[in-house]
Length: 569
Image (cartoon, rainbow, N blue to C red; front, side):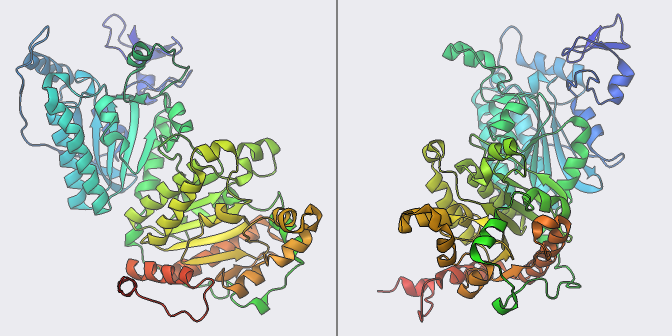
């Protein structure tokens, strides 16, 4: 029989045996299913030509070839001379080296693809592969087309010595040039991806997807166990492990890859013209006297209502083609922060928001009641930097009692993570719109609210501290929370009068928790109006007016001073 990941067996070429469940599969059916076992969903390895055939629209592929590279630079011999190994690999695979490159379309969207092939000397990174990755990066820049890399490798090619090591730096430099050019980069991690490839271009992309079960790491499991003497946990370095630890954006089954990639490739942040203003008039209330407000404590209760729409609710109603992205690329994927790309009224945006977890108590606890850890704020920062690179507006939906106050969060640098976001948002060269859709608690809320326009839902609140916390500290009596709520001026009208917010998003007559769809329609209209106002602004104007907006808070009659004047004696 033929094993899914093994060489063909001439005895019974029409059947394959799954290495996951040991089930027998008819070879033609297995091929039609993209080499995914229908019983256990194990993803078998694809060759580079099979990858291109699966991902690119039929008839759209055009090969990209690289230049000449050095051949056997070390005159390397182990049990066999290196030139013999190259010759046999080329004969067995029909490839010139371990990567195949092409331009084409995915769901009608242009893309440049570099697909690695593990059959060719373990997909090792040598001079030829490094040259091809650099070539396709240059092609992406020249054509202003996103780059997709499909990674499959055991690491750097030993037979080329330190020259193979230099390919890590060479390809990383190519990705830095893609960043500078504002070109979207996507990496697809397949099994296995290790060593020099994992530690260079495969993990430098804006978005990293992984196939189920794909393994990725710098050192392989056997090396780790032999070096440390430790027994590794089940599933270590798998795609699912990597997702939990913030290293990849999503784990996507092979059948769903084209649609997920198509959603990303369809985004054109800097190419979008502002949408029509039709139907947008009156979508944001800017005068406090136009509001009908409840008592302060009643507003606090409504802002915290467990059935109030959350970020995922608004995403379902307002954001088209949403692709959630995960992880801080350091250690964790904080469930209290949700973020990703999508379209609002046809405008490509990066949407980031708090997620309290809805009505289910178990889910609310898992989401930490919307109280983000440092990993959550670092994830938000990563997505904002990606938005800046692609020229894409940022929309934040804020609903949190505050940042996570636990000891683990403190050990992970909660204060630093919040401070870094404040600085990042102050200088982000794209429009930022923040909306307080529920609670806006302290620095945990502000970390997503340094924006060009800050809006608040009619029954939302914003405060330096919770009314209960204020009452306990200043009144020395928690029951004084109602008094504290009034004193803190947390309601939408108060925030508008103070200039903290720029407008109020109306809610349905009985509150957003009574009519989620109606609340979403009102929010969409407000976002469309506000984005249309900001999108035409150039980056210098955005940054300057954002700086001046926050500089004015707490000052009275202070003349604005230009940066060059501040440095004068």
